[in-house]
Length: 437
Image (cartoon, rainbow, N blue to C red):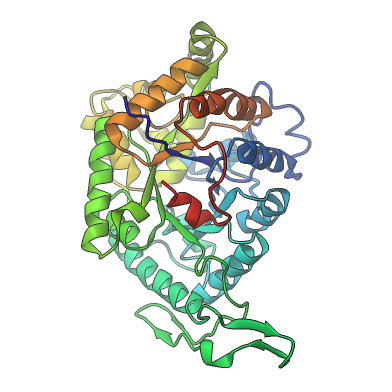
């Protein structure tokens, strides 16, 4: 197998109540307003030399499952949820080298507002900030911002295209060297190196320049998760890092090749676009312990099947309370204008009933990674060898300090010993660290 190093990111499933009522969740239910667990997570990730933490987000309280908010609020499912941009400031303050990537919907901001906010966070973090650009997965979210609902899937990417171009124009209003800070002439900035954006697109317009000043990285890092042909084209054009979920390394390899081809067609160096594949590992002190915990997680999902079904309802905008549990997914006529990842979910589980599919994926999306530290490291190495991927985005269904320790103090040292992940940061800025290998 290859010994080529790969990058590591952490998929933080929103800054909401983590691991509510789960084992080893501690006082999370009482301290849910306190972001200290996310600060602890960020510091542990920096100790393990992760490239970045990605803070996922959505901006509505779910009510699609059974047309009710009951399940979502009873189990603290993504609600209450704090604004990731604000929590990002705490994580940036608590760390020195870790990248901080916060999610933002193109329907929830104007490009100037997000550019100013992201540029400020890039300054405060000394060049470690990024924005995960999303187009929306639910009518509910759009309705919170005065819209009737979502546009058609590809049309949402047309909006996002104009949005990112407007942001880029704003970041580029400050040329390199615009800030001279010359005390002898009492000149802070050279006005000849600051210009107007004057962006007029089909959806957004902005005059500029960006009054927050230049970003240390020139432009904050852009993250995206495009899985459809239109989404891949958009991500390959604009993203520095792309998040993808595939159950097999062969499918992951095919996806990465499509991304790289699209990046080359857009005139970019494919090596500048880092594809990180989502994984939800279960790491134990032994294989037997890990297998037992995996079985317990499946049983928990089966005993509380409303929870995974409600989660799917929220992301796909399909009411799964009305879908037969024991009919193969391939026989069901389920269509959505929400996340296109549902099509992948249905395809890979076409011969399974909905109940069986929930059981199969109860451990989390992506490949099944279960075992001791050494075994999970073997599995990641084997996946990377076939997929050719640039790294992994590690996540879990409910953050606990136990899981943080298992990954950062157990799994990662094993990966480092094999030369698979970095032992030191190469650069100060996030984009430079992503491009280091």
